[in-house]
Amino acid sequence: MVVIMKRDFTAEQLQEAVQTMEAGGVQVMVSKGAETTILGAEGNAAGIDQEKIALLPGVERVMRVTEPYKKANRKYHPDDTVIDLGNGSAIGGEKLAVIAGPCSVESETQIVEVAEAVQKSGAAALRGGAFKPRTSPYSFQGMGNDGIRLLQEAKAVTGLPIVTEIMSTDNIEMFEMCVDVIQVGARNMQNFDLLKQLGHTTKPILLKRGLSSTIEEWLMSAEYIMAGGNHRVILCERGIRTFETYTRNTLDLSAVLAVKQLSHLPVVVDPSHACGQAWMVERMSLAAVAAGADGLIIEVHNDPKNALCDGAQSITPADFGGLMSKLATVAACVGRSL
Image (cartoon, rainbow, N blue to C red; front, side, top):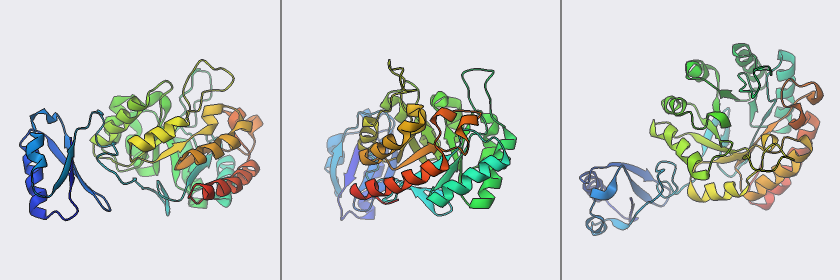
């Protein structure tokens, strides 16, 4: 249930509405937007007398909410959420945020060189995998703690906030200290123990959509994090698994529109993992911005042919620079800036 207050409500009227809802056996979340204040019932609202609430002074109207996600629901929070990434960068506002860097951290020279290149082209944050979930146990698994250390060195040189993937609850304390944005990969989207513990952190969480997850399942995973107290969730569409085999996954740009309608959380698109082919990244990036994405996360490598991981889908720093110029043009067409 959602209760929308009138613009001229008083503090006493707000308190009365909250107490009346709580008497029905729910917790009440108060969301104050630029023009609207909304009361959201968390829990089973069957015990609330909707007509009684509607007649209270200061109440504009009462709406039943059927979606199982509450905190991530735009009905509870009509204004777009803007999340600070660190170092003056943000995601979710008028300005687009592009996160760029290699799939995996491979060496100090590699990560620093790429970081300097993407910063020069206007990237808002640096991505790089230190812990890599791979299909094959024989594939490169990442540098682990050493990878985190090298990401910190790249940040020290460029100032770019660090975005990297977490795989285990054992690493949460280290990520809290060393990482700016914690990424939850597609394979862990429904790792509920991990999501619950990330809900108690203070860091922004970039939550990738699962390989075959519905939009509701994706938003429910965000709800797990937010229910723990961390409302700084960034959703990432990275392609879903379909019958098509030409591309690595199928990029679902319609999900960007759907999620922006259903939720207030910012949405970014990962065209690299979606397509799996570097030559597709530019056009899919431009399409994502045209569709309303709040940002992009793009794999950039200084030597893709010799990359230890996902070189086929990584673009070069020079290609990234050209892409950023084109993104600025498209962004202006849809009322955004870069």
